[in-house]
Structure formats: structure tokens, C-alpha cells
Image (cartoon, rainbow, N blue to C red; front, top):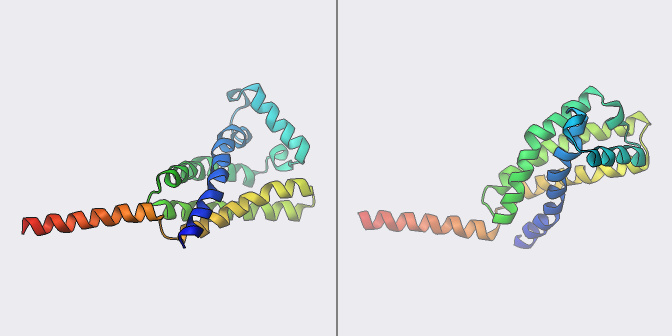
Length: 170
């Protein structure tokens, strides 16, 4: 079980890092004023939309704008917490992963339903969204796993200390 937890952490860390950088720098350009971003980030997003044919970033349907806001205000802070939780082997990591995973999976299911049902999306565009669906699934799976051994042993030590303190007082 410990090996699976560590493997999930190793796989999720770069995915969370990518999301932590892309959400405020690239995705936010969809719903925030253009003059907030430097030209090289605007050019990067324009290159992406041309190269991958991502019509959602071009047409900006209302549901997509809403999902971007959800990502920026809810999922992005959870992503930062998950990065910190993985690095620090925090006992609360499964909870934040489960919350993030459910939200992300639900969002990606809606996006992928639109992308596959519209007939407008290229295979290249579809394959850019699939890893984020997979990230949601992996985060849910990580959320269902126990905390890492480091976090568990730390909380067990605290529990033993409080029992010893009570015995000394009595």
C-alpha cells in the first residue's frame, strides 16, 4: 500500500505543478482582461489555440468560462495545498486530493462531453484534455488511500505523547 501511495504522489506532483502554473498564467486569460498579462503569455495562449485547435478558448462558451472561474477560485488553491501536502507528507493530503479530484473530474467530464459531442475538436485537442481527466481520477484514488507513513508516524507519536502526559498528571 505504501508503494502505491508513493507512486501516486510521484505521478500527481508534476501534474499538480503544471496545473499550478497553467491556471493563473494561461487559463485565466479566458476570463480576465488581456492587459493583465505580458505579451509572451498572450502569444503562448494564441499559439496553443492555433496549434491544437482549441475552440473553447476562442469561442469562450459560458459554461467554459464558469469552469475556468471554478478552477481559479477553488481548484487552483487546492492544487497548491496538494503540492505542499505531497512535499510535507501531510496527514490531510488524502482529503484535499479527494476534494480536488472530484471537482476536477466533474469539470473535465463536462468539457470532454462538449469536445467529443461538438464534432469541432481535433484529436490533438482531445488528447490535451484527457490527462487532466486522468489527473482527477488519480487524485480521487490518492484521496482514498491512507496518509503517507511519515504523516502517520508523526500523528501516532503525538497521540503517544498526550497519553504519557495524562499518565504523568494522574
